Image 1 (cartoon, rainbow, N blue to C red):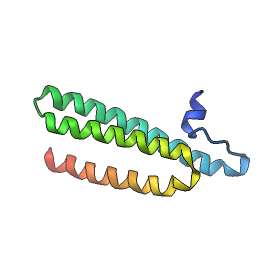
Image 2 (image 1 turned 90 degrees about the vertical axis):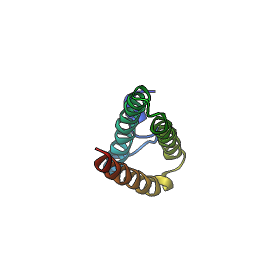
Image 3 (image 1 turned 135 degrees about the vertical axis):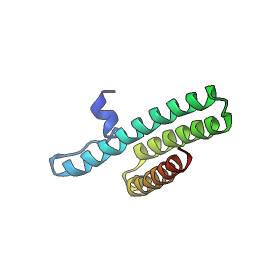
Image 4 (image 1 turned 30 degrees about the vertical axis):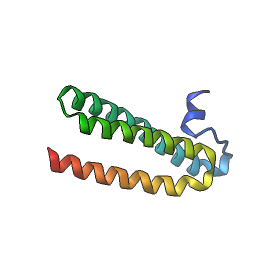
Length: 100
């Protein structure tokens, strides 16, 4: 598996579907970056003796993995997954602002 295959969820696109391919790449990159940030936060919270938040963040990482796998199953799930991803970011950025 090469990087381009991973970024496009293993789907093949023709030249007319370049915009859709770019959308898949952006969503997969956001999954990677959010999972890395959540893993960092989980370690930070674990070593700061805030284990409950650490468990929550690990759960969200597994949820991201589930969404990534669903994105590979069918193209029809793309809009639903991006909506869930936007809601996830909205909720957690608001929580980040509240707890800082």
